[in-house]
Image (cartoon, rainbow, N blue to C red):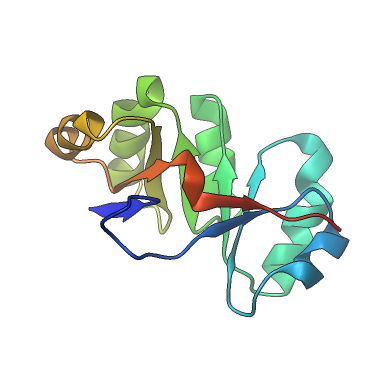
Length: 130
C-alpha cells in the first residue's frame, strides 16, 4: 500500500498546478496533481505529450474511467468511492493506482482491508503558482 503525506514515511509529493505554466515551477520528474474537469483537458494533453506523471482528483465513477483513459498515473478519490474505484481498477486492469484521500491514521487500516492501492493525507499536495 502506498502512503503519501504521513509523518513516518518519506515519500514523493504531488504538485498541484492550475495551468501549464505552473509545470515549469515543479521539480524535475515530479508528479503533478490536478482536479479532473473539462477545463483542465488542455493541461492533461500537455502532461500526456510531455510524458509527465500526473494524478487526477475525481468525483464519480465516470470520471474514474476518464482518468484511466487519459493515462493518469494516480486517481485520487474520496473514501465513499474507494471500493468502487478499486474494483474498477482491478476489473479493467488500470495502469493507474487508486489513492484515497484520508485525514486520520485510523483510515489506513480500513483502506488496507478494502485492498485500496494507497492513501494520501492532504499535506502530500504542494500548491504551485505560475
